[in-house]
Image (cartoon, rainbow, N blue to C red; front, side, top):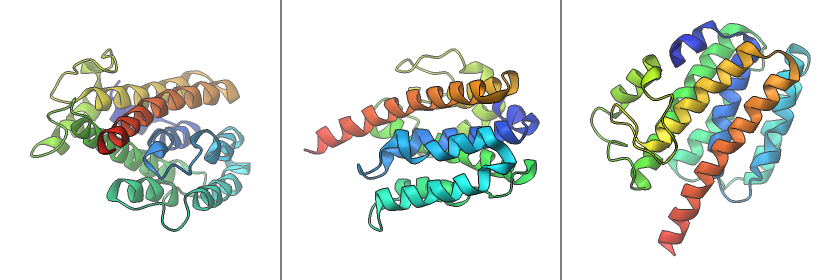
Amino acid sequence: MSLVKLIAHADERGLAASGLACLDRCLPLLAGAVEEADVLRPLWVGVVGGETDWPARLAASRDALNAAVGPDGASGVTAVLVRTMLGSAPSEWAAEPLRIWADTCSVVALEIHQTLDAVDGSGAAGVGAGAAERLARCREEAADVTDASDGAEVTDGVGPLVGGELRRQIRVLEILAGMPGAAGVRQAMDLSYEGQRVVRAVVSRRARARS
């Protein structure tokens, strides 16, 4: 099933985890003050608790991110996008606002990874004309890239980082659809942390290249 269809059919728990996982994987792009594994942990607990926990945990995660990054920690377009992803999360535990948020986070995370592919030198099609169309097509016809490995060439003109991010987005939704309770959320969180490590490696290479 394509990513677009998975989002369309997901319940509140799957949608919240999907949007949160996209945000989680992009956290290494913020200033180095952020400890990725801790800032959003309260919100992962909120996904488990659902309606009773989500609003309070969302507020706690926003406070934690603001405290970690500080007023000057969101310079640059990408960093602003990451903070906006959390700021736009709905406090209401309801399917439609969570679906809009999850879909937006999906697109933003893929766009960020597309830019990283270009910066990392491994995705010639990362930016420029037709980039948005390629991403839209991959979200609607995801079967073409689900078996690609990180670091390997991916079909349909997208780079390896985009391919890896797309696979993780699909897998998170599949996990939450098939595994109830905290176990499914835990697997989704572990998958998200794997994606964090990929992005952190790109950020590290970029820093070394500038030094």
